[in-house]
Amino acid sequence: MEKNEIIKEKNELVMEQLKIKDDIVNIVKNLQSQLANAECKIQINELVNSKNNEINEHIVQFKNIENLIKLRDETIKLLNEQIRNKDEKEIIITAKIKDLQARLESAEELLSIRNKEISVKSEELRIILDQIEKIKTNDEKVNNMTANVDYLKSQLVNAELQIQAKEDMLNTKDMELKSKEDLIRIKDDEANVKSNQLKVLSEQILLKDITKDSCPKGRPNGIYIIKTGRTMFEAPCNSSGWMTIQRRQDGSVSFNRYWDDYKNGFGDLKTEFFIGLEKLYQLTKKPHELYIKLELNGTSKYALYDDFKIGSEQQQYELSTVGDYSGTAGGALEYHTKMKFSTADRDNDHSFGNCAKKHAGGWWFKNCLTSHLNGKYYTSGFAPHDGVSWLNWNNDLKTSLTYVEMMIRPFS
Ligand SMILES: [Ca+2]
Image 1 (cartoon, rainbow, N blue to C red):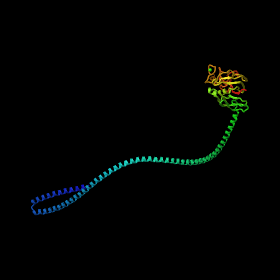
Image 2 (image 1 turned 90 degrees about the vertical axis):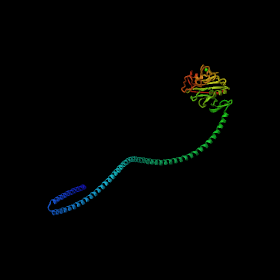
Image 3 (image 1 turned 30 degrees about the horizontal axis):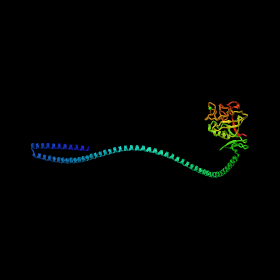
Image 4 (image 1 turned 180 degrees about the vertical axis):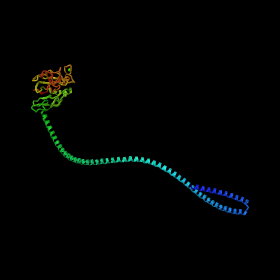
């Protein structure tokens, strides 16, 4: 603004100057014409002088104005310079601002990136904090468990101490027991020695009782050793010298057996047994009588035969003879005289079938029987067809005796 005013002023001054110049030229022209035309040259000179003075004054004024203009120009110049300087500075500042803005933008971008990173890190941190929280919870649990474990450990220590005490007691008891056991062993040994001595003595007594091949008479009932030929065996004897060779009483022993069992004997001498056909053959080489005791539900009967003899194995242990019968049960054995012995695996009977198989035991079967004391045992006393039979008891074969004892004794 200041600059324009100055320029305007300057132009006005120039215009004024030009006008003044024109005026001066016109004045000179007028004066020259006046001088030529005038009559009085002096007057014109004087006028010219005066006018010259005026011109000189004007020139001085002009010069002053020019100086003023010059000063103004310089001022303008200075101002222009200043303005230019200002512009340059502005440009520099603008550039700087731009630069700063660019830096600001990149900084903002960086900040945004950093913010994102911070957000991510915050999330991670949150997870880690959660984990730390969990770990803390776990730590608490672990602490609780550790406390429990400590408590249990202390209990364990107590229990171990108790066990130790019990073990000590047990050891003491063991020692006592051991010494007692040692004592018992010593006593046992002594008892064994005594018992052996007793055995030897009783064997000596028994051997004295052996009357070669039969039961001793006048001795207590019991098991005695019998010697026949080269064989020795045990058999139940009673005080009257009867030797039991077969007994049925409770069905505890099965009599449904093969040839070899009947040949060698089987069962338990104290309960049910059969002495064996070979022994009977050996024993009855000498004359023997046979006593059969029979019972059914408390009723007791007997059959006595005075000449009982069994053949050899070559003769299939035949019932060679029974002799004369006497007794209360009726004679049911005579029918079997001269019959060979039969078992399920050796059919020596006169039947088309196998009597031993059909009647469940070995006997001197014919076709098939009137007696069969080795039949199947029936506690009820009643059998379909295979019981312990004695035809004459009820005149049938369905009656099954509940007690049978066959005994022999040398005939005298
Ligand atoms: Ca047959």
